[in-house]
Image (cartoon, rainbow, N blue to C red; front, side):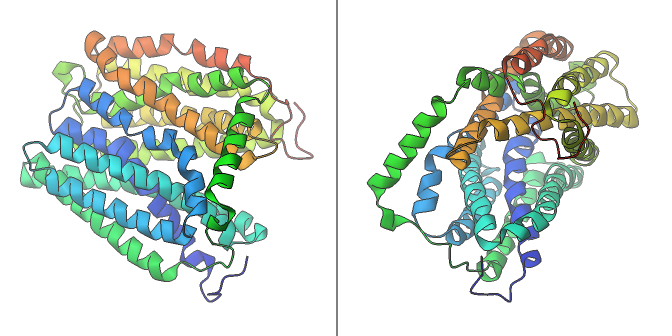
Length: 430
């Protein structure tokens, strides 16, 4: 697609656009839990409240037609980035208030809703603003800067908050300054994209189609999704494959932060930012890249069971950490790297299955439904993770997680996929 502003090259906006897409997701899904832990909330409350923040991603497919129908993708991108910045400033402003929990949760929810809507608009804009050749050419840059956003969020922002905690000796003030910083970054990103995003001629709302026609079309694709062959097994796979990891995700940062006397490892906020935001993200990225290479060479059928093992067996490192509670940070780093590497490698099979199941008519909308179930698979276990952990303690919680890993194998055995799906032509045979 040709842009009316042809002087704007893709490398001038793709890196910043996908950096802006990654930051709010990381803030809502990871940083919020760490902040609430440092402010003294219980694990039960943290896991329950922050799991609800997945809801905008769960129901995202239901309002994606609105983004298509009203205004342009470019307009949605700029406005949603503005709202994300406002939400971050709102968190910073309300942290000193006595009722900070209610206010910050409200602003986190606004951030989550804006981020989910931004995802719809940004991914659509990417396809409208670039030719098919350029979409393939820049997909690596797109993924790289999303990963950089993950490191900046989980790593740098968390380490900044930890440093400020030491400097101010007041966690609420430290996190307030951190969120003011994040809000300023998003204000600059919003301003930058308001001027630097191109104006593709194909980027226009579809209001002319009519609201009734849009609703009718959406309902048709919704019904066709639930009539796909093997839908029950597919939903079971989407909900169960990541169940152990969904429980771990909410509790692991809390375990790493909690005092040794309470069963945790006693890491500082800055140490947590380094462990999860740099070492963990590196393991996740390397595992994901290797997973893609393996499936491209051998096909889905050959690598499904090894990926099931990869996404489940490394969870055992948390049993070792909870039992021995090592003081050496390098040992904790090694364990987190192993677990995240396995998760990245095993998660490849999950994402590839979503693509496989979405094939056919309306594959874009059907894929959006699949990602909604993916978000639901993280939301529901996260809501009960805190209650379970506080009832049994960290060590027993991690043992229970390992006992649930056969459900991942069961989910994988339920689905039927072409064994060569994902294998490059001329690659190794399964």
